[in-house]
Length: 320
Image (cartoon, rainbow, N blue to C red):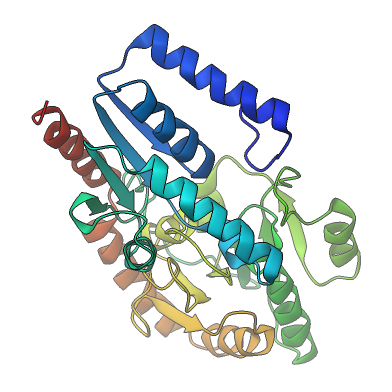
């Protein structure tokens, strides 16, 4: 198994060689790689071993591109060079989920515009996620994600405290699992301390997300950067009003004032103000939910994503 964030040289060499062995045994006509390490390792090997066609999906720039400072800048410089090598396969296409990431790669001359395709997210099953009426009772403000600092969970907790001090009746619910392999992972003790302080509820990892999202009144994701967050397109499909940050990926899911609201990144106070305002207006939430469902049907259907992906495969295979 490939470690998503580890830098152990022996393990990385082992992962690289295992991909090489797979290519040698299978002799694929086309390889589709997804996320940073598979894209880099798989792309480099596809060139070296003569794989005819390559599709590389970059579903967000992630933790590495959020960090600031000299060390982070050096890492980004090195990763960009590796991306450029891996994506220079002569018969390839690169899939991005939002225009900001596409422009970044073109601006830094990592790839060429004619090889780039945009597919907005990984899609949502519109039959599985059905629009439903908001539940009655104390409203639930929900954040569902991996438990990472760069998902804006600290700002979510700050907002929960501000809303509680404002004496607004609601429940702040965090849904998601720990991700200890990620450098941005939040420790269990921190989550448990927030729960013990009464700021939030933690429901842990859930596999029945259609049912879980149906229990929410507002879905929140104060992330620092995304490709195109799946939980937000699921929330839109479920007919829930959304509050998220005005950053790449997140803003691509929301039409401001119609399907949800955008707030500045890393600002728990303004997040809290928007939550309070939306909690006070059930009719507005209903309108946003209706508009979000229509947007999901138009742009985020899993069937549409599959069709576009298969079209890219056909485009490359016809060039052989």
